[in-house]
Image (tube, rainbow, N blue to C red; front, side):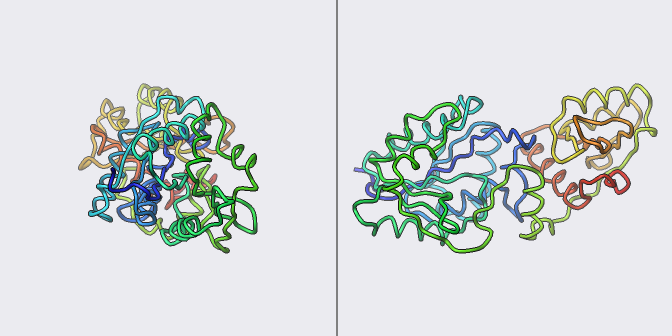
Length: 332
């Protein structure tokens, strides 16, 4: 029998597409040594005694690497409790990620007492709040099959689910989330109000992220020095290449597009990278989508996965410090 039989485990759903964001929000900086995703996983590790299963999808290798790297520093003795599962259907909807996580946990721990279902883009839920949910679940009345976090008497995430109800989550697919199941069995769901505060905030857009980052002081981490150029300082040929790259690059913030390996686009103009540092280029006169602000390209020299993670961190910190409104081009 597993040494964790009868324990409460956690499933952290980190396979989302970040479709309303552009860049993968789980890889954005969330204080020294953390990303949004690693802060959520770290809280889960501290809040449950069992394993923490992280369900991966988009940028699976990068998310896994960031989790292992951060947790090895923050919770070195707890990393042995980390497990990972990858879903190849994450682009087809959230339901597949939940189903994959529940099925994997069931195979790992068929005698588990229950599981915490937690969203990776809720980095402000504390270990103490997760522990409180688990403790309430373990001492619940037999009539209840789940204990859900609540704010002002409204159900939120995370939720701790007993095996009998958890099995129904394996049937999810497409865009279905767990909400439909919990709603259908709402008489079996005990709401635990975790009180006021920012714990229930999640991250769907850059505006959400920037607001949380400033409230939590994550923006106090300083980005490295950037080289700053404007489009009229490069040749027409290079500008054309930059504009083509901007149209297919990854959106980070309003008017900001990142190209992790894009610094090489400047080489033809004799603008070599200085000590390998990134660069920004303001493309005045070019607009992306419905945005009414100039496009700013943030160019990096990434060659490896670690380089790309570091570049995204630096680019995000740069955007936090410069702001992303219509006057950002003047401050770039």
